[in-house]
Length: 326
Image (cartoon, rainbow, N blue to C red):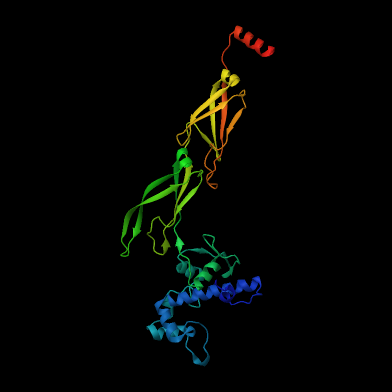
């Protein structure tokens, strides 16, 4: 069962947007103050002995002492040496948040005349909503930062993309052991290239990058398929295109196209009709494998460049006579 977000923010189910923002703001400040106190040994000691009252400012009912008096008695000095950045003894929320979650954030704050206002859209630098992170932290599921992905291009031949292949890529990466010592390790990544993959296909190896920063997950390694040019075939989506040079005699009297397919077969395509400059011969099922439809392939499309020979006057007369008399 998932978390009850209404309980986390302690709001009723009919809470308005303003109520939600105020509740989230309060939860944010509470979490930051709690971490600020408990992460500081001196503040934590005061809190353990005197509770929240020992950390708050202002007058005390019943003759309670000020924070300065408490710190003076407890540590033998004044409380001002604790590195506080605010009058109430707590650090700014964004400073605490950046330490708590291991990243700097942009709270969208503006300061004018010493005042501060926080915009409703509070987001971290990577675009995540801070309140979502706070809710995750409140549930004990705080997400770790991940290092920026490492991107590499993987050039593949058209034959590989037609038949599939297994590539073994050796990588070197820096890691930090339990002792804190950095070392370089090597690893071999197996990339299974599937028949029919296209240029731009991405293969991700999660968290296989450098692992050197404490509190930060290793980067993903992402390979992007690129397609090498082929000397004979040209790819057009799931189709293969071949352009052949033929003589005028073959164009007029019939032509047989011979070729070797990407998987090594000898293919023979006979064309009995007259081949004009815009003629295209389509051979079904002889194109690229369709990755999302196993067992199916695109088409092979034959195009032609017709070579026009130089003719003598007698040849031109004979051809003209032949064509006009038919």
